Image 1 (cartoon, rainbow, N blue to C red):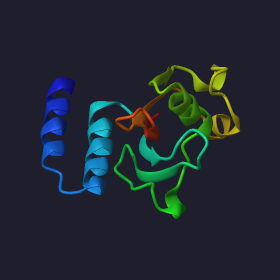
Image 2: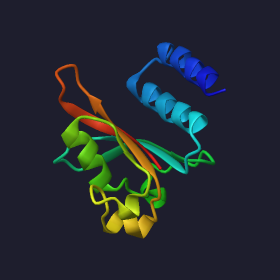
Image 3: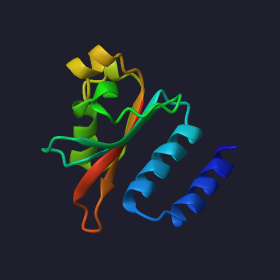
Image 4: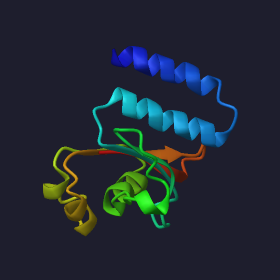
Length: 130
């Protein structure tokens, strides 16, 4: 089933008309593929403020507007962006690489964060799933 969903996502990305549509489709594909509470695609580097481009919860609620915002824990995104490699934390509250006040406050259990990199390797943002 997951392979079918990933293939459908790849086809949908090919037909996207603009960048925002591509980002929306990436988040949608991640939500359909994984058993996640939230998926967010944030823009910015390891030392920048992270700006949510698209964020959705498992019910499809748009979490991007400020009234629904639940910020991506910066400690998790920062590690992935600095390492320029995906990060998997099975228990973020006990993981010394990422535990922070926002992780504890949001009660993040497991999380995946993959950096979005430019062709030259510069970080552009991250795809975050918890």
